[in-house]
Image (cartoon, rainbow, N blue to C red; front, side, top):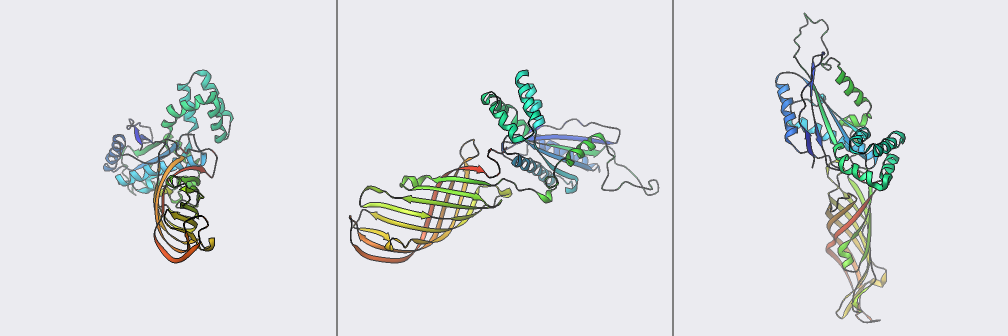
Length: 404
């Protein structure tokens, strides 16, 4: 969760009858979640007091991200942070939506350079500044900094510089006096949509907004909230049953993904009359209802196909009919994904599913080359999926991971 960083700064006046008040909020890595900290609530109280006097405020919200991770993802993340603060202000004040703009500024390389000058020795800073100034590609810049002095510089940036760059700054411009005008003494009154005279701060903010792509500065065209990934994973309990298994999952869009797990076991359980030999596949389509395509809880539908040869130590062994009549069916599932390390690429996933399958299998005497003694055809209803999987994710856009 984020932590508020600073309280409201003293307002400054200018000759154009406007004033301003500002604050900042910091966020943890890869997050756009808000905490109603005292600093943020104090800022809202200040806005309320301005509104009570009848003065109109124009609020500019700018989000940034630290320059580690894919550039495109960091641009989206910076917008998500600004947008989250904008929504929070709208829900806690009476300010109209048209008076608050949210802008994502992406990776803050300039702040990285300035903070490095204060943190590192002049020699180390010179190397950092040269990389930032001479390498135009953010991805190549990041790689160069990661290699610098065997990674020592990069680790210091991650611990002491980058956390302060995952932030949102909020600036409110408002009138210092409520203008009083009538048609008699003001033949050409100012348009309602432009209640402020241009001043230096307003011009600066406008210039910043104009440098951001339109789809990031307009809430009506919010970009995709997360880059597409694919996941490589394995089910841990299945290994305990001597089932070798692997699964691949790929994002289709912000709310849909597709998974293909494969299970195989060709082993006896320590004796020839106990076995659960299996080859099974269970492709699945998943829906992730979380806002912004956040991947936590999901529901899914799956199809199942399995060949089997099982014996439980009794007198009978069971095998799919003629070795070419697999169990076939499908069902529904639900699950939850969560992190268990500091590295966001590693995750755990718990899931359970139930389904309906058509079974057609032969009965054999449970001994070597035992003769066939019967056949069963039936329909199975029940649990067909139980997994606790560990997964590793890959970004489909770039090879560098860890969006911040």
